Length: 184
Image (cartoon, rainbow, N blue to C red; front, side, top):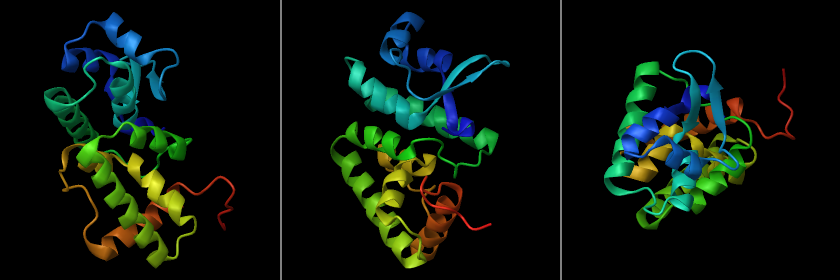
């Protein structure tokens, strides 16, 4: 997981969801989703948006939708904008985490995710990037695409075929498949 895209601290989630820390711990622990632990201030575990959505929809009685989801999305977007984070590197096991995130989606979110996967596969094929289906899957972990899937806000998506192809090349360069050797 890219520490720069881990924007949601445990304490922030408690505030955003109006939940006590022990309740949040019950929703997130055993085992914790991928996170980044910071020893410096502000201390604590930080999570990426897709992992939080998947975990809370699975373990929280109310799921994560409506106003709660909107608050979490807004916080994530503001934090990433303030950090000016580079969001291309997706971290370890991006494909597995993307599958968990996709399984947690509902209704329109699933359709938007499928559309993004199709656009990425087409762009990867047109750009000559290998592992086309993998590229479609891991694209779901990119924060701008996550935001589009969950809210419909398309302002962070690539524009046009050339934009998607450029995005596919950059995403592949930073996240090659484990069994693919990159020429030096």
